Amino acid sequence: MRIGIARERAPGERRVAVAPETVKKLAAKGFELAVEAGAGAGAFHSDAEYQSVGASVVADFAGLAGSCDAIVTVNAPDDSDIPRMREGSALVSLLYPLVRLDLVRKLAERKVLAIALDMIPRTTLAQSMDVLSSQASIAGYWAVVAAAARLPRFFPLLMTPAGTITPARVLIMGAGVAGLQAIGTAKRLGAVVEATDVRPETKEQVESLGGRFLQVQGVEVKAGQGGYAAEQSEEFKKKQAELIAGAISKADVVITTALIPGKRAPILVTEEHVKSMRPGSVIIDLAAEQGGNVAGTEAGKDVLKGGVTIVGPASAPSQLSAHASMVFSRNVEKLLLHLTAAGAWKVDLNEEIARGCVITRDGEIVHPRVKEAAYAAAPK
Image (cartoon, rainbow, N blue to C red; front, side):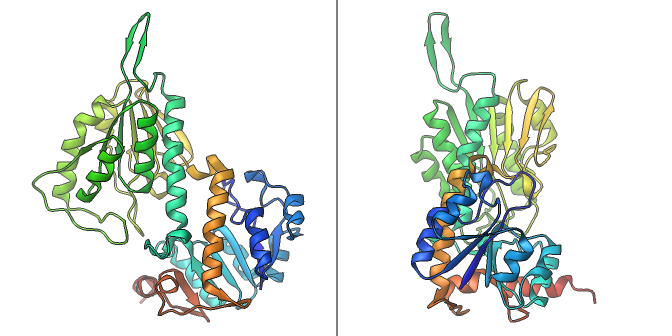
């Protein structure tokens, strides 16, 4: 099987889906690897480095797609690139198929075996393949470092000849993988950390990292699936807003991480909340790419509102592109080895991981939820 590693097209994207260390491992397993020229540059891997571990270099995407059995990329190719892929070839990528149904239809029409890295089930068996978790952990770390760099105050408590400097107060909204990494990082930098999440079961994790858990009381909490939060009732959202209003007004840094698969990110921080913060405060909105958790977030920009800086990273893991690419690549390696055997695809849709991440095959949409969404969205 010949696997092509594509160069990323998305603005600001610096990651590469397969790093040279993984090329070497896959080559030892009998795969043939090709890389589009310049694909690794943003992660500090040269074409020569890829060649040194056995990959060939192809000038452009058309040449790569036309000569490979599978294309691996962080983000899905542009719509205009899909026709360049060979019929019956495979695409391994972040696809977000529930919100990109037009892309899914194009892949099905091209008879592409589409494997969505963002749909890998969050189970123990699939943990080593879970790119969302590995990238979220990096994003959570980066968010705290980015906030510290922008905050015109110290994070830790300091005793100085000029007097005591009190520690920064950090509020982290969402205690998933990104939020927990942010809690741990902020605590290590010496901040006073508070966190909130719609899932009460995260309280113990937050407290184990030294954070104080803020919890909505007296309202039913809807349980999510697969490690994600569920969309909550309007009553819950109102109570949550009341709970965190005081915490936000006292916070020097707010980091938001709340995402709902297939839907726009929920607004957690309103304009009034932003106005309540002290000038010089910083908000890092890790949900910016899905609309943002903060009123006024603009993906890819730092926005100043009333002296408060709202940061909406377009791709937070790209800010640490070397390590982000390394762990992404290792996740991809494990998935490829799981779904192939003897140089061919071994896709059993009755098997948990394949059932979760295979979206199209043989010209059909085979993922039940995506198929249902595509049918519902089709013109009647």
